[in-house]
Length: 151
Image (cartoon, rainbow, N blue to C red):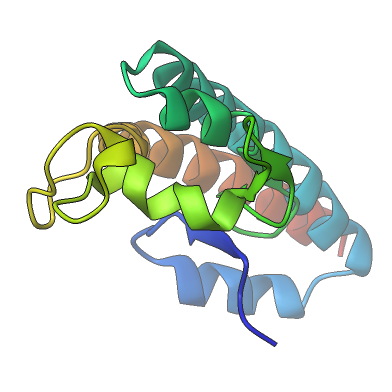
């Protein structure tokens, strides 16, 4: 089955050792981490959605409605999917990359493809990277500290 949505997880320095530390803790620690991470993901999704809604291309506004937070141990957001959008009822995944990167072939996206330069989705994620990574690290360290003291 083909992927119909794009999931972007944040890159965090020291992620793997931190997640390995959670393997030694009770399941409640992982649940707390997922709950806290979901809040960070919701904040990122709101920023990305707002940027898409403010974008000049009509497809960007349509695709922005599909941006959502993902509940995981790492901050992540998802966009696209099979939801039908616009007057032609096109699936969101067919509009996603054209709205983000433009197109030299399809005129419907209204702006040229510029290689790796994105118009709205990825710049917001990249600009939020450091802030979210710092908050996630602080939350994860706090949870590990709380559960390590109890043991």
